Structures are given as C-alpha cells and as structure tokens.
Image (spheres, rainbow, N blue to C red):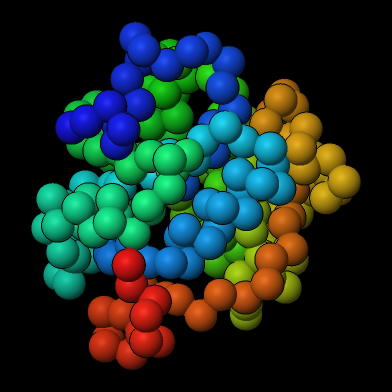
Length: 207
C-alpha cells in the first residue's frame, strides 16, 4: 500500500478533520465520490477515508466481489487527493463498525465524523451496539431518496433526536462531543451499487 492510499499513523499530523465512509463498496461508484466531495466541502473536512469492509456482517457472501477487487475499484473511483481508500478493517481484523471506531480513536488523534447514507440510518438499529456508535463519534447523515422520511422518523433518529444539530452547524459537527448528528440535504445522485451489479448502471457512472 502506498502512502497516498493508506493513512499511516506515524506520518499524519494530529488533529485532522476526517470523514469516515464505511461499506462493502461492491462496487465503488461515483455516488460514493459525490457524497465524499460534498462532505469535504460542506463539513469542512481535511480528508475522507473509505473503509472498505472485507465482509459486511449484514450482507450475504454470495454476490460479494473479492476484497482485493473491491479495494482496487475503489481506488480507481476515488481519484481525489483528499479521498483515501483504506483496507484498515482487514488489517485490524474488525468486522463491526463499533469496533473499528474504537480502534481508530486509539490509533489516531484526529477528529472523526461518521458519514452515513439515509438508508443506513434506517437500518442502524440492526448494527451491533448501534447506540455506542452514535456515542463514539459525530455522525453526518446524507439525504438519499427515497429513504429520507423513513430515516428521520426511524428508531435511531427518534432515540437521538435531542442530539441532532441543524445544517447551519455542519462545519462544527466534527468537533462536537458525541452524540451529535446532522441530516445533510443532498441533490440525488443516480449511481447505485445494486444497479451496477444488476447491469443497470447509468452510462459513465463507474470510474
């Protein structure tokens, strides 16, 4: 792995503002990049790290491309100096987000914010120790049709309703003590990993 791809603990300056985008990236596509660029700009981040999961515990193994292939595709799609593609979950041996966040916070002195699509906020209560995830780092939830209404009316949003901050505070979110989360309005992007796997991706959407 090159320094350009992988954030090394010993060489990064402390105190960077880092967005964490986790997932299977099966495959990575321009929608991931679109969210990341909006996070860099809207949240005032220094970097976004794509944490490519060796195997999402909530997704079947069948239909999952090999990890090395997904990692390589993510690096082709990212194509931005402030988006770093990482295999750190494979190297740490963590399978669950709550464990990955705990290890990252011990390894680095950066300020982290978890980047989440509205569809994942809907299913967040299915994640292991999901309340501890919300208590570990601030969370930015990005609008994704048609899930936004269900996300904002769902169990996680209701349970942490008092911790929600307005969009006028987005640039301060990464520095807020958790639990703190914001819903980020975002114009829809047509790319979808599911559609790409089904051969229905819009032309030019895969980098």
